[in-house]
Image (cartoon, rainbow, N blue to C red; front, side):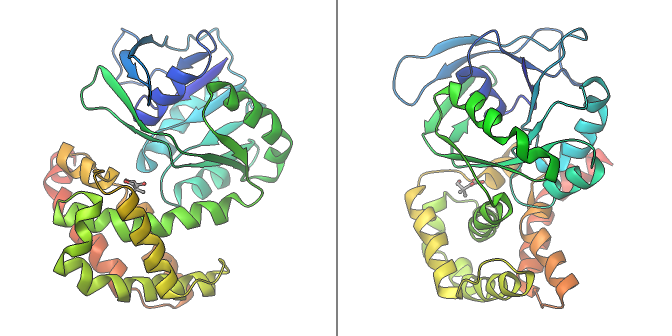
Length: 302
Ligand code: KPL
């Protein structure tokens, strides 16, 4: 049995594509008694009515996929892990960086893997899940004792029909995506525009070059593969163009009044920069501006 913690777009995509009868969502305090039912719209083909049961206390999953928002991950796992066998490998699907390391440090005895995915999925309404674009998922071991589970985990996830491959250096892969997110997500949230539309905006044009210089400096000093600022900008803009009609996950969070993952993207980069003695004023400014957009929500919550 594969348990999925987090019934958002990505969790629902895995639940709909993995063989029925082998998947269950982990119930959380806020979930209703009814198990999630939705229409799954594959990239090609007719919608499929999908119903995924809740994991029951007597079921013992042999794989746990964690598809919560980065900021919810630690608390969701704190509530869930006491009922999951210690031998069950955990695959983290969070955006950005920072939450994955926090989990593997918090539970050093567990086998923790991380995934980086370019699958596109969204939920235009609570009862629909659209698989908007086929992508690729890479999985790699984060903690030393997870290495031995990698092959089996990849083989089980491949039963979904989604493209999945093992990755020997998952931290480098997460970093590669973090750079893209740091260059697209905050701008689209601040400017309230689709990914492709940010390229012509004066605010983006003013800040993208200094942002890429900061990221390049941090990459070099933190031991990530060295990448020139122009190469970083080129990569960011290629993704903005290839996903031009997309609403980024951060813009979608702001529109929906949810907390964003800025602390795990530009916020993570500024903290890392501070620790390494690299100045990061642009990452800090973008982090602060995105936080301003969601401040009313944070005040309501506190
Ligand atoms: O991953 C993304 C996100 O929205 O979080 C990008 C690559 C920016 C695509 O929208």
